[in-house]
Structure formats: C-alpha cells, structure tokens
Amino acid sequence: MNRRLGVLISGRGSNLQSIIDAVRQGRLEATVAVVVSNRADAAGLDRAREAGIETRVISPRDFADRDSCDRAIVELLEARDVALVCLAGYMRLVGAPLLKAFEDRMLNIHPSLLPSFPGLHPQRQALAHGVRVSGATVHLVTSELDGGPIVKQVAVPVRDDDTEETLAARILVEEHRIYPEAIQTLLDGGWSIDGRRWVPGGTRGRHA
Ligand code: GRF
Image 1 (cartoon, rainbow, N blue to C red):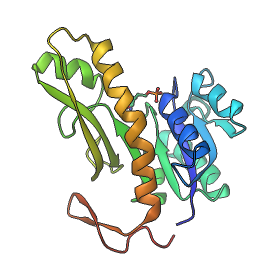
Image 2 (cartoon, rainbow, N blue to C red; image 1 turned 90 degrees about the vertical axis):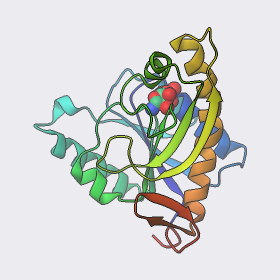
Image 3 (cartoon, rainbow, N blue to C red; image 1 turned 90 degrees about the horizontal axis):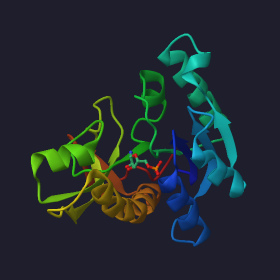
C-alpha cells in the first residue's frame, strides 16, 4: 500500500496532532493527505491547517442519508489516493460504503482495553466497573462498533482517586504513543487476519 493517510475527526484532534508530529519527526513514514471532519468547529481542523494539510468538512446535514454522506467521504479519500483511513475521535458510526471501500484499511483508536467498554464514555464505564486497569486499543474498523481486530493495545493503571478526566488524561498519553506506531505497523504490511484476530506475519498490506 502507498503511505497516504486520510484522518477523520470530530473534535479536539489531539490524536491527529500525534500523527502529524510523528510524521514530522520521522517516527511514522507516511503523509497525511487529507483531514475530514463532520463538524466545521472541530479544533483539529486548525491543527491540520497549521501543518499545511488539506481539510474538508463533510457534514451529514448536507446529505439525505448516511450512505450518501459516506459515499462523499469515499470519493474524496479515493481522489486523494488514500491507502489507510485513521479515525481519530470521529464520533459517527461508519456506514457500509466507507467500510467496504476501506475494508482492512481503516483504523480507530478507543480509550479502553477492548472488548471492555466499547461505545461512549469508556473511561466513565471503567470507573463505574471498578476495574484496576484500563488502557487504549487501536483496532481495524468493522461493522461491529469498536469490535474489529486489535492491532495494538496498552494497559494503564486506574487509581482509587481517579475521575473520568484524570483517567482520560493518563490514557491519552498512551494513545498518542501507540496510534502512530500502529499506523506504521499496518503500512509496513506483512500481517494477516485470522478470524477476529489481527496477526503479525502474512502478506496483507504489502500491496494496495
Ligand atoms: C480519544 O480519546 C480517542 O481515543 C477517542 O476519542 C478521543 C478523541 O480525542 N476515540 P482527540 O480528538 O484525538 O483529542
């Protein structure tokens, strides 16, 4: 696969920033070709503009249904020759057209040790459950919410006095480290999918 990334965001964009920084510092051999947001007010758009990266707002409000919105995203990503899509705080469910166009070529990062605590407010879910360890997971995106093959995972301790905010901040530090690493791993190729598992070794990702 080529090494052109499309990053989809909805908000703050700190993971986008970690990708931009890793590319700049040569830790991630890739180019961020385009950043797409479903919201015009996403702070991450400014981060992309500051880095000289093309940005585009594709809002579901401008489309009749999810599929036509997703088709517009696919059209843009394909026009920019994107090989790998990275969801980075993209707060929308990915529909069939996007899933199909980028099957096994779309990553997401989630702030929990999946399969624990998928969906919204994973840090709040972790605290409510009283787990002693949580973390972050980078996984391939499938039709199952936060349920695709796990590429990289890191554990983070949960402290007795944690709030949702303190736990989120501790996890975020690790997110910023593992997301660029996972992207590099996928782009390097030489992996495969075995059932629901992502496994190193194999021929996937070597050719686009
Ligand atoms: C991160 O915690 C990410 O794991 C989750 O949403 C948050 C996005 O933060 N999917 P940011 O926009 O990257 O700062």
